[in-house]
Length: 159
Image (cartoon, rainbow, N blue to C red; front, top):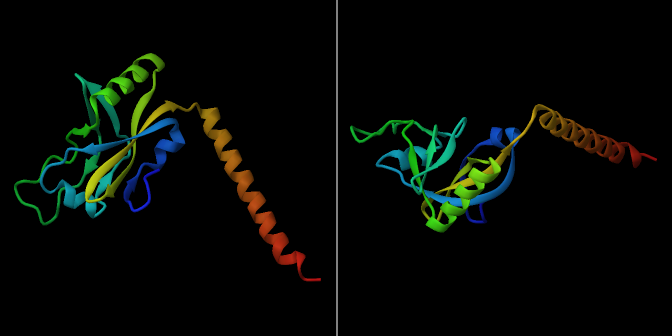
């Protein structure tokens, strides 16, 4: 998760449902013109987006940034690919893991830190349907336990 003093703008909740997050990385985003203003207003969607490494550069595809309402001719295509800014050594390391282990790069969060727009990039492994069902069962069981403890707390002290 992003550090303290950070304003989270948008999260990809579906990613944590569909993938096991093995490791996370922080990357800057190369944005144009009014895209920053749109993101600051929360007009960004991470659903169905992913990152790929091509020729030593890492880019995000499918990240939808709505055109800025008060913008002009400098508004850009909402679905254009956006380059991520990381050290070459980190990109090489990620590329090796993606190639060897069959992992996927998924943007998990877009946040603002010290005036800079950052992406939390997850190195992820796909979940099977039975894994998703297992997670839902665990979540339901935890919810039931919390409810039982809450009820016990209410009714246990009425002696």
